[in-house]
Image (cartoon, rainbow, N blue to C red; front, side, top):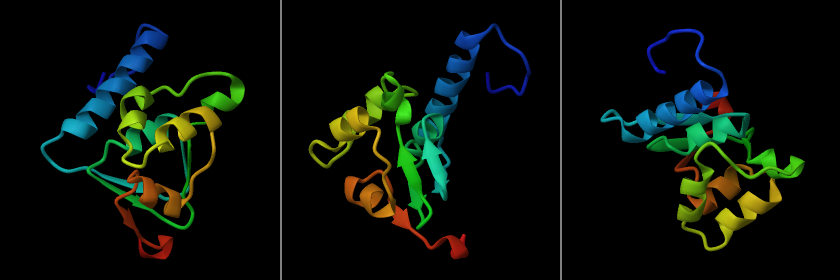
Length: 120
């Protein structure tokens, strides 16, 4: 899935590629930096939380919006949501679909750093 080849066998291959990429980001021996500057939702959120360093800006809007249309958070959220250090935060994010800003991400531990977008 990470070999750069186009195509695939349908939705299963897309999900496999997403999960393999998230696993690679999380387990890479080279620390990965997630720059969360703007909209970070769904798969983007699932990918961003796996970076060793997760940088938010004043423009960050982070959410798992699937719940707003009756779905459950996916793309690995069932792994990282319960591991958020702030009690109840994972459940809140999972059930509400709320948009979180940089301060929210820093207080929950989903962001490790804050940088003004003009400095990226």
